Every structure is written in C-alpha cells, then in structure tokens.
Length: 176
Image 1 (tube, helix red, strand yellow):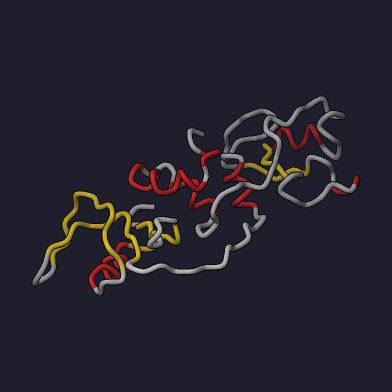
Image 2 (tube, helix red, strand yellow):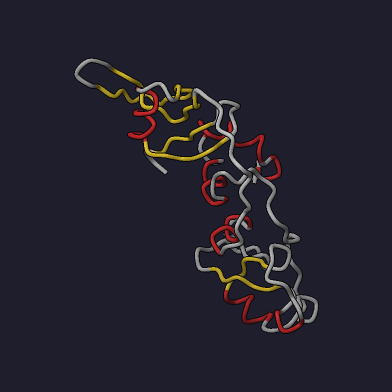
C-alpha cells in the first residue's frame, strides 16, 4: 500500500484510497486538505509540499451505504488468513461451508470460514461436530463502514497514520 493516501469525508469517515498523485492534485485545486503527511517533500518549480498520507475533503459527500460483498478476499480478510479449525496462518487457504451445502448450509457470512487444505480434507462433507472439530470463531458478517473494501480496510488498520481514522468504524477489529 506504499504511495497510497487515505481519503476522508469532511466528517472524517473513510471514503477511499487513492494514489499520492491524485491526492496532491485534490489538495492543489482546493478539493482536499492534508491531514497527515510523511517526511517526504514534493518539489515543483514554484512550490514545495509534504507528501500526504491522509487527506480530508473540503466538502461533505453524501454516499449511499454500500453492501459488503461476500467474496473470497473479504472472507480471508475477516478470518485474518487463519484456518478457523486449527488456527494455522497461511496464504493457501480454502473456503469451507461449516454446514455442508447438501445439508442446506447457506452460502453466507454465517456459514463460510477460511480453512487450510489439511483441515478441509479432514472435515470433508461433514459438520465440524461429526468430524470431531470445532470452529475457533463463530463466523459472522463483519461490521464496519464499507466505503473501502474490507481487505483494504483491514490492511489500512496496520498503517499507523491511518489507524486512528479507521478504528472508530470497526472497533471489533482493533488489536487483532
């Protein structure tokens, strides 16, 4: 996420992530103000400016609340790339239906978890109880302001300059 700038609404709610060039353009024409900057200085023929990491719009944008999409990327971000049966962190995870689909298990936030290949093969087409396994965390739809993608949001929480602006919109993710 290097070179990325967090864009806040006038009310400080996170709206978007853009490249530093676009953020500098918005600041230059007066559409945004710099809230946080790193130590790097941008030079032009007539001016100098600190490279922004967070900008706030000069006016309020009204946006309808988007619905958080159920996707592989969002599921892995919700489960922190951790198998929800054995706790192993990995980049090579599958998605498992806790209650198998052929037993009327829904394809939903409440029934899908990240799972390593070993645990998925062990569980097969059974419930966790039948396989002698248990789910580490009860799956649920994440609660946050989804103007940013969930994966971008969780990655943004790791950036010190963004964290304070993102934490109020997902307190249950803080410290994880």
